[in-house]
Image 1: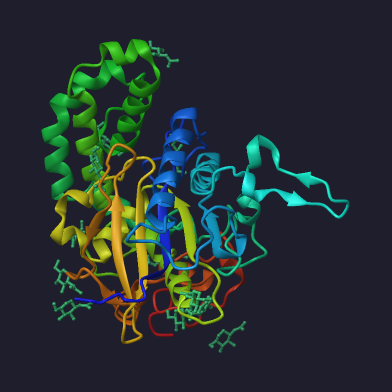
Image 2: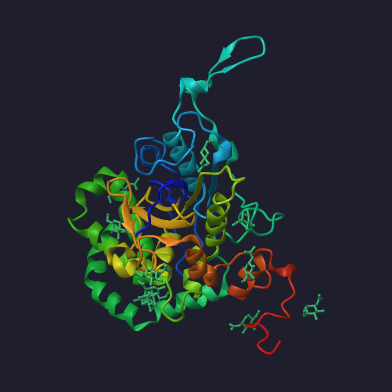
Length: 402
Ligand SMILES: *[C@@H]1O[C@H](CO)[C@@H](O)[C@H](O)[C@H]1NC(C)=O
Ligand SMILES: *[C@@H]1O[C@H](CO)[C@@H](O)[C@H](O)[C@H]1NC(C)=O
Ligand SMILES: *[C@@H]1O[C@H](CO)[C@@H](O)[C@H](O)[C@H]1NC(C)=O
Ligand SMILES: *[C@@H]1O[C@H](CO)[C@@H](O)[C@H](O)[C@H]1NC(C)=O
Ligand SMILES: *[C@@H]1O[C@H](CO)[C@@H](O)[C@H](O)[C@H]1NC(C)=O
Ligand SMILES: *[C@@H]1O[C@H](CO)[C@@H](O)[C@H](O)[C@H]1NC(C)=O
Ligand SMILES: *[C@@H]1O[C@H](CO)[C@@H](O)[C@H](O)[C@H]1NC(C)=O
Ligand SMILES: *[C@@H]1O[C@H](CO)[C@@H](O)[C@H](O)[C@H]1NC(C)=O
Ligand SMILES: *[C@@H]1O[C@H](CO)[C@@H](O)[C@H](O)[C@H]1NC(C)=O
Ligand SMILES: *[C@@H]1O[C@H](CO)[C@@H](O)[C@H](O)[C@H]1NC(C)=O
Ligand SMILES: *[C@@H]1O[C@H](CO)[C@@H](O)[C@H](O)[C@H]1NC(C)=O
Ligand SMILES: *[C@@H]1O[C@H](CO)[C@@H](O)[C@H](O)[C@H]1NC(C)=O
């Protein structure tokens, strides 16, 4: 066991957005529509922020992060990125989370040159989102618009991902489960508002049922018991197939949702070990997809099989970095499955409660996609999303003999 005498020095968080409006994803390519955060979703993210505050910013907590500013946010200690794939719901979720992490405080009052004291509105609201960025500056082409940069929505316009989807839809597992689900999907049809009840559409089916059940009283009062849970069960199964990969190992395209995020995770953790480092909390606000891929590539699902489904709204995965008495850095992974789940559960990384940072990076290095050209190669994309500027002579897939 690790003796983390020096305690936590930082944490990288992947957080899922909160409750939002209905969100259609095209079943043939997973290109999605915009969705908007609801007041319920904002509340969930705020609660998540408060939870993270009591976990990491409270000096009495065993997970207190050394030297972190506890009341008045020090923006040098935070980095926040939001995935643009889910539209405003994800960006606004990051704002709500930060409101809970660093709530308004009188202590943020400043004194002007003329001696006048000023507090920001809403009782000292802290405007941390000044550091929010939609586009990952350290990663990929800076000249691209956020929707073009593949880092945060890497499954879109990825040709190999389309093959992968098709492979999932034609697999025997898919055929078996869709046959088993048929009676349920037939019974569910009157509650689908006209959307297809084909099993390929299972994500959208669940989303429709969940959104209506949450926001529509007539629907809530009439949906038969267990229908929501059954829809969730099948959607969990399908999303697990889509965002993992049965055919290849860690570098399968099915894992693409986490493969482009891992470099930023590793760089954040690596930078936290440097004496010059200031950042103590790095937040990436994302969709449900990277959670599924991450739990699979780290083998966490081998030890906790129940985490293989979709993470609930306002879920969090924490990669905690600690320093032991011998001066080596360790990483440990925790997960909380949304607002209703009070447990911040310790997960295993490759079967271990903690692994050295070196080992963490080593085990996952070969799955990472750390540049636009790597993404283009990994997706067999030579035109869209900035790929047209590269030279593919050395691409082993496009030119097997090159
Ligand atoms: C899904 O995407 C395909 C391919 O771009 C397109 O042909 C189809 O119309 C889209 N489906 C819906 C429901 O938008
Ligand atoms: C915390 O601050 C103390 C005093 O400035 C310093 O000695 C220590 O190295 C700092 N620890 C971390 C993890 O930054
Ligand atoms: C379900 O959708 C798939 C893909 O669009 C299609 O091949 C299949 O025929 C559909 N099944 C039914 C029963 O409509
Ligand atoms: C609410 O649910 C009812 C019953 O399913 C449906 O007829 C109605 O269109 C829904 N309202 C909205 C705003 O979606
Ligand atoms: C990862 O996902 C693949 C494909 O769904 C599955 O075969 C494999 O068992 C999963 N691995 C773990 C550790 O859960
Ligand atoms: C620090 O982050 C930068 C990118 O922001 C990365 O290039 C560098 O490798 C990181 N350093 C370490 C030690 O991980
Ligand atoms: C989160 O909990 C829901 C039930 O509320 C479950 O369906 C889902 O599989 C869980 N997800 C994970 C990643 O544990
Ligand atoms: C992950 O689990 C697979 C079995 O699904 C096993 O073959 C592999 O060795 C494990 N990897 C690590 C690093 O523990
Ligand atoms: C996990 O722990 C085992 C011993 O319990 C060790 O052999 C293995 O190398 C560790 N894996 C990693 C990735 O640190
Ligand atoms: C990116 O990944 C490649 C291997 O695919 C590696 O050679 C390179 O050093 C990595 N670059 C960074 C900045 O991590
Ligand atoms: C990659 O895309 C090219 C067209 O740009 C196509 O000719 C080639 O067959 C594709 N490779 C694979 C392995 O699908
Ligand atoms: C593309 O790369 C190959 C191999 O490195 C090189 O021979 C060729 O000149 C390059 N083409 C262009 C247009 O830069």
